[in-house]
Length: 230
Image (cartoon, rainbow, N blue to C red; front, side, top):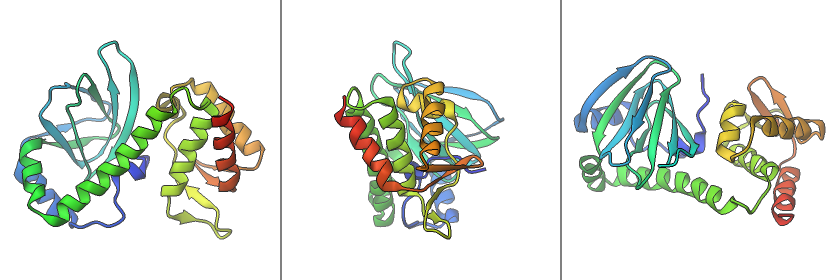
């Protein structure tokens, strides 16, 4: 089962082996906990911990003091995230049975800055996540829901390394329609309608839980047109 959003969690190269990464995180872990599937945990904004997902799959959402909630990303095992954003709390939901290392952020960062491989990995991963989050902020009011959905598909396609025999890009598994709607800030029905229209126009082909992008240029054109119409 592989439904994480890859450009959030993966780097082009893996400087550390999985065994080395596990050992580093375990060494800096203050608490190690196991959670069954469908457990929800609220991570307070004042948290000084980072999470390292030793095993399993979790979904992370953020919400503010007035209860506005948005999907942040899926975290695949052997990846980490930092908690504790000003005025923003996080909701963690286990999609599978999961084991989590709670790592003291300051202690972990101190270990990272003295290791060139680790600092490069942190730099790459952080910039990927911040880049996508910045796009979301800049798109508010600047593009239609259709444009935002198409941009999400475009970003997923750009991150994919899978192609078929016709060199069409394969996105092996999309987030759920509900999560895509939460990410974009619209209703699930709008996501379904947009995907149906894109398939009808031959731009995408749905394949199981994923899609095939038949024409990246057409998808890019829709994004640009939807932006400038606003």
